[in-house]
Image (cartoon, helix red, strand yellow):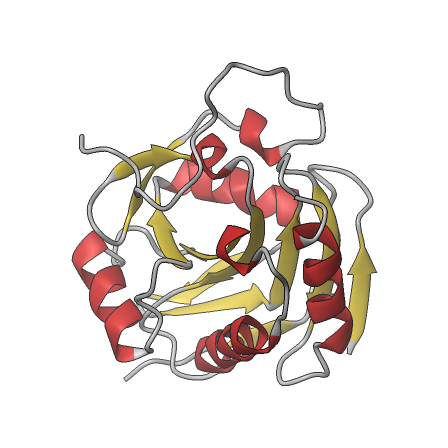
Length: 205
């Protein structure tokens, strides 16, 4: 198990790699929308200007999540080894956290394979994995935006075949201002520290 503390945006760090071999509508209503334009800190991921599409085919920007604590993992839906375990860890975390502000905790899964992971595939994946509640969000963008977002998380990934990627397995936590405050790396590890970090940030809202 490797716990990674926040060291700044666009950091570059090595990750554990796992090969996973595989056989303009409005944003979500449940997302808190900023009512005024506020200056963001230089460390906020909400400075990234890219447009994203969610599992419902809706266009949005990362800043639409402002005001929520956001738990993030990067996956691809055709993965058959590491990603299902990472998804299971996300489900475990979501079910375990206890805070009066749980409705302000969003669980975000970002595809590293946007060419394959269409909104329709992301939607079906969310249903198949019982992650179709309001707290779950699946996003895809173009390759450039995906790489840029991955850099903010120190997530490394590489396509090693037409249907297979190697990639880091990191769960990241952003506070309500979009600042990266905590990370934990590994699969099937003890996520008690991550859960505590989420509850601390959610209780600040």
